[in-house]
Image (cartoon, rainbow, N blue to C red; front, top):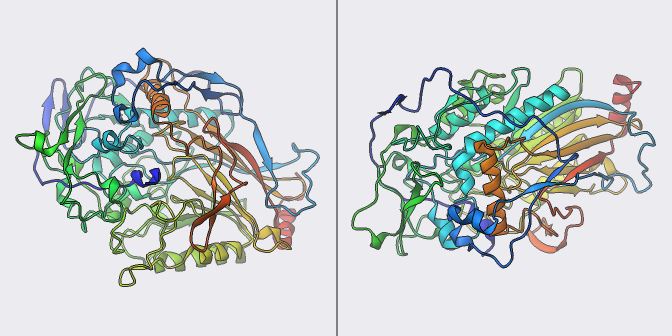
Amino acid sequence: MDSSMTRRDFIKVSAGTMACISLGSLTFSCGTTSAAQTAGYPIDSTVSTTLQRTIKYTTISPAQIAATNLKNIASYDTYGYGAWSYGAALVSEKRNDLMATAYTYPADSSASKVLVRFFAITDIHIIDKESPSQVIYLEMLMGKETSTYSPTMLYTTQVLDAAIQTVNALHKQTPIDFGISLGDASNSTQYNELRWYIDVIDGKVITPSSGAHAGANKIDYQKQFKAAGLNPAIPWYQAIGNHDHFCIGSIPLDAGGLRDSYTSSEVVAMANTLAYPNDIYNTGNHQLYYMGVIDGSTPNGDVVKAGKVGDFATPPTVVPDPDRRSLTKPEWVNEFFKTSTAPVGHGFNLVPPGQEKGFACYSFVPKATVPLKVIVLDDTQREDDGSTGIHGRGFLDSARWKWLKAELAAGDAAGQLMIIAAHIPIGVEVKNSFMEWFDNSANPSSMQNAVDLPGLLAELHSHPNLLMWMAGHRHVNAVKAFASDDAAKPERGFWQVETSSLHDFPQQLRMFEIKLNSDYSISIVATNVDPAVKAGTPAATARKYAVAAMQIVNAPDIVQTSAPLINPADQSVIGTDPSIRPMPTGSYNAELFVQLSAEMKTKMQTLFPSL
């Protein structure tokens, strides 16, 4: 089975109730807390990008900890897992894949103008680790995928806080115009997960525990902390991911009968659904396992209440918590209006009127003086699409497809450069990986994708002002060139830039600069950034654990030596994609050149006659 299948799965739980509790000097009431003078976690004083240094680690061979025993944190130090050091700088590769054959780079690269500078984060996966609805035990069964369990899940809020502080420091060095988050803010569409995410960026006091709040007064990953918050001068925008509105990013909550289960006191019992990814609603005939929870009273976050159902006399339970409730898509969108950072709504205030509730597409112009539009696209599956497979594929319903075409056409007509920001990338996954462009033609009675992959690519190529498709989802830093479908018109090509997760190694964000060069070509400068974690802080422990997980699981897609070339017609592998470079460090920096159409070049020369 393809390992990418293991990213999106479902749960089966029973309903329950809960009361808010008081623990020591901390009061927990439906997810809110008040604490005076709560301390935060500063980052390191040295803040840099991978252009200055990278994270390196060694392979431990032979393996001392099996992938199915990733939870054995207590043995990491014994065998050297998690050790890392700073390595050499990662150069930024100049790429002319989209340019005319005879193109030569400008002689003076300094003679350029930065039009827009922004950051991107994605796949933060803020996790309620004490929730009975997580699927921790699946990693112990499969030993392949850190999305179901990773030791980093103890520290997701603290890692986000360190990333935000790193952005603030970079902003002080050189101003940042805006930021964008490309989806999977939460791990399993829980209310408390989303509130922690927004509240970290807003700079609030965070209580990163739930239910019984075990260890909240003494365990580092459970303690309250004061988030720094994003610099208020930086507006940030949000895209939606599959984990933001599907159970564990995989199952429609209502179709799966799961909506009321999140506040249950019983730990979820489910089959090893990773073995049946096309049959997510019918696993009752298979061995069931309790999926377990993290014991917040233990320093290493011990996994408890997990194993075969038959080995338990009664179902294991936890203290339930109403703040674990699942959010519908409209409810998820509405939470972004409850914020103290700008803009209120974080882009969802720009959703066009007349769309159904939960429509999560919009566009914005970051700088009034620059003809550049960002098109934020929801390309996740629908809850009612009728699919019985894992819901991690790319998809556009008719309303979103119509809207996207109109936005692209309007951008061309207005003489705007364009960037599409979506969660799911295109043209990089093989069919039945459950991360590819969705083809539901085998189920003609169910909802169909409004456009197939060849049709989508044809539409994108027809808009010469499109510079880039940005995405997350796969937790990798891959860059792919979609060269023009007409060799005589290189301006019809565009780039795809993926950004890795803050959950898995290398735990990075990206900085982007859109530059106008002296020859009036465009450069997209994409640079990976490691959060500047300070030794001794929870975020530093998370980095150690991310390295250890990489050493133990050895995820080949993150440090891929080659990438498959996908045939858009049937999404089969037809060779090796030369445009996706190997990433031995998990990182990739590049300056990606784009040729403008004659019309757009003339406009830019008029707007910016001297660089």
